Image 1: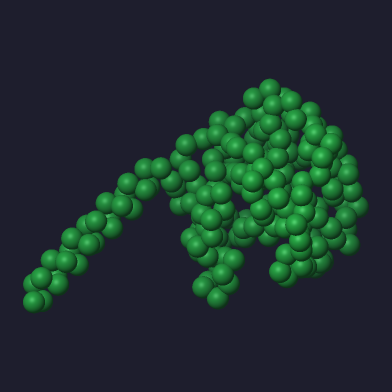
Image 2: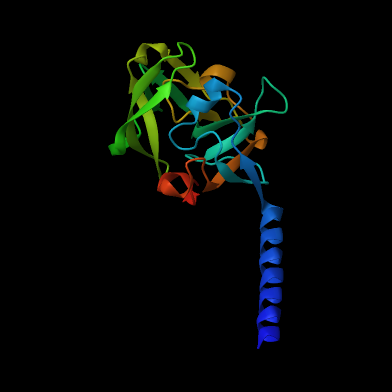
Amino acid sequence: MWRKAVRYLFWTAIFIGIVIGFALIFVEPWTVPGDDAQFAVSIEPTISVGDLVLVTRSTGVSDGALVRCTDPDAPGRFVVGRVVGRTSDKVEFSKGTMLINGKLPTSSSACDPSTVRLKNPATGEDEDFGCALEEFAGSTHEVLRSSSAAGAARDSTTDVEVQKAFLASDNRVLHMDSRDFGTLAPSSCQHIIFRLWGLSGWGDAKKRLTVLW
């Protein structure tokens, strides 16, 4: 009996190993770094420092996708943002509000909780940010769009160049996105598709086993 159990466990382990090995051909595990305070706040509330996520090995972008792209200003590092504009799109920001080709993305409701507290890297002070569920390109995701420092989010208008993509931080106020480093080539980007684990562990359902794409 025990031999049969051992054989079962042996072949099960081999099968699981094959599945994991096959999956890693197409995806790459990545732990979100925390060595840049501005980057850390810009990716909230969708992902957080310390999250273990899966990133596609293939490159490219699609509207509404959360992506990891090569940092154009720092080789060997990455930037993270949501694809909100591509060739010939006009992306505007006015007092923290985003418009794509003159239209506002649909906002369905407030997040739960409706307020997120983060430390502003520029001031070192904790600030409260209003959180809303935004619907864009078939994706529903959380965005931070207001705070006591809303004036810090400067207005901008960008006409996206041919074969480029505009990335917007889900933190629309304390951002690190195409307003800062410009539009990017899709070939420098990979989709973030799944969160496996977060620093808050299993107690926080938002920070584990979450589909992000």
